Length: 246
Image (tube, rainbow, N blue to C red; front, side, top):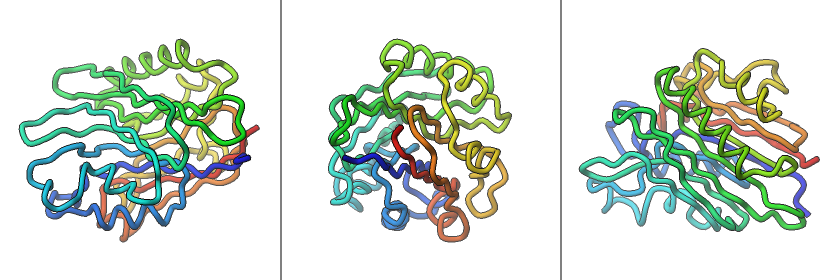
């Protein structure tokens, strides 16, 4: 029975370096593997891109999952003339079902909630995982958080284990209050360190944009993976947490 889970979240910046100078998927794959996560929440993942199609096999999330994560799901959000991108979840356990909900608050910015139900061996109910990437403006984020709350209320049983992770773009740090108030969630870095993690920019993180929220778990450990190595691969630091199911 798998009572302990290791979780990671990472905005991969569409698989390219900070100034879009070069493809960084190989470096990102090595970085993600070193996190030793059972489930990985990814944002800004290209499902298709004309220029990079010959440089990798399959979509970016398939390339990153490779032989380590046996199951994956991808939610297409933003469509461009040369391809599309969105959120992805990589899992070492079977993804029973998944859905991507469009929560775009403006035609200028396409966003979605990727919601997966994952079967963990020995658990009497599935683990609900929701990968998010919220908007750049607070009025958009409020609408998107309302959509997230509505989805949880409708589709996630009150006693079901739940993890929500991703790029909240929440430098005003108002998302936690909204989520904790309505869903009784805990943010892993708040529990361990007393405040959200600094995750942006990756080299010298200042802004607290990325989060991991949980329900139904004891939080054992949380860590920011930034610095020079990560900054070469993306503009965001990666976050990880070790959780124990209650």
